[in-house]
Length: 200
Image (cartoon, rainbow, N blue to C red; front, side):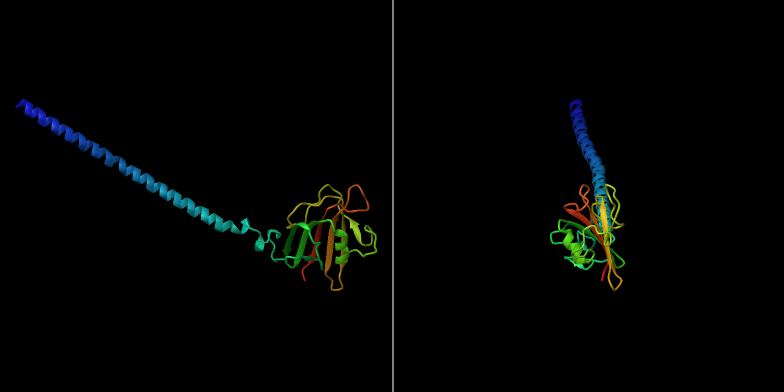
């Protein structure tokens, strides 16, 4: 009889052990599920925040009008071929940027064909000397000349010269041009230019 009792006790002890194991598995599965749920919530919140930030700042992530030449804050899109001051900017001009606000425009570009543009836009007659004081004035002579407020791009390098004219309708155009630092009778090559004018 004692042997039977001991055998019964062993069976009961073995079953109890299995019961404890099952209880332990159930206990660990609860916190695991909670951790996964919390992780899913965190991921969802992060995705929502990221999407909101992209929507909020998407206007700052792309140029105005989808035009890489337009500077931030521009309110009018210029055509593909820009006529700055009444004459198209030189064919092949590079690093072109513009800023438009309240009917005014500022355009900057780099070109090796500036003399013809000055003639075309009407700020320098064909037969006038390049640096005739009647048609232009010296600008700043510093190493760098900041662009007008709002206009993006690289600054001009001094010295520079400003040409200007006023039409019979009263609309003016001003053209600032980089001059050679070693030759007093020529422009830098290639030349960076800033044109300021009133939109038609």
